[in-house]
Length: 140
Length: 392
Image (cartoon, rainbow over the protein chains, first blue to last red):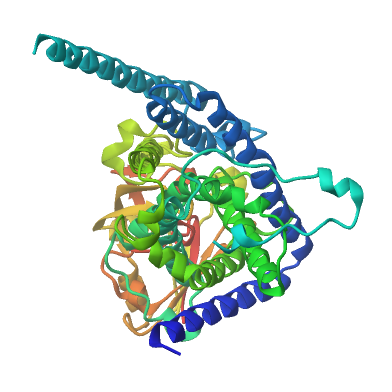
């Protein structure tokens, strides 16, 4: 075996060892079954809900001109929504007056509007540049 | 690719022949995209593991380490825990992108080719499940939402090892593919369609932009100069009594002003003594500017005034620099009612039994009449409503 092969097997072996350590720590918990349910749920919700949703949204803009820009705006907006969701969906009052003190719905709207505005301005800038390039082309 | 040469075997049951996995015509579901985003994500998980371990061992040090934990730098825990949460939020953005790049592989046909292939797919399932679990439970923890029946801290700690191990195993298994797509000029990258290069750059720019936006709109909860941009973080530096957020109110801890009427501080050591609040106030000449840095990632600097803990320990006949301290709170319930502090913290001149915050008497929610404030320590160990110090 070459040195890089040895390293590869060593890294893999260390990985298996750490997985074993973590699994053992999970089974030592009072409710390992609940952890397993949440782990399986994480897999199912990602692979069965989030990923198909992202692909479906991707289909909406597939093949459109300037797709990269709209995809960028959607990636940013989607990420912001993902991070904000727990703040919006958490049931019950905040745990204390200084926790969760901001108007998150309004702030999310502000950030999304800023992302949309930024994407719109970039789009206009591109149109304008393309038009002026075409004019330069016909003049020359 | 070996997938291309493998012929689909005739299904043994007729109706299965009509069942086919979905096909993916979209671009960028390739190893180069996966390698680039995977590198960022791997680094993010690495930072989260290291900073998480720092937090874990600051809170639960083994015996040999307890008296050696350093009280400096003052901002140490503020930095590591702020990073833990900020990088965890960035990972929440990177993880779905990485999984999007490789999602078509979920539907490879046939689903299992060999024992080795089955094991590899199983290890990927473990990696995906534990990685998603870690970022989601972490995100729910910082908004203090616990919709599960297990205990967050030990489970987040345990699953962190499974994620770390799964990532190492994944890197080992995929090493040849990672190497072939490491740079833009690597052999595997050059074998991919050339027209995808600009498209991939545009996607990666968008992902970088997404990480930037979620970071800028949340990191103000730990980086106070950016507080004006703090729109979506669970905490805001200015929101709280006396201009400082609180994690646990007096009401939640079962402490009331009535119960404090006959408050006395007891300092137990070779020469035990008891102090009233008036006496303590006449002794309070020390000042320190120290952050409250919470395990949930937020942190704020404040000016504290009070008595140096080392002076109180010395007066009880303790030896600062050698003796540890046990601090007991008046709170009726709570996992941190009794806190132990290693010798380095006891000895540090910035470690105070604080009576004032930003020039005002401590409010009840900030630990009136007296609380601990020490450098480089998690907020849960900055014990409030202190009534007993015991030299160990």
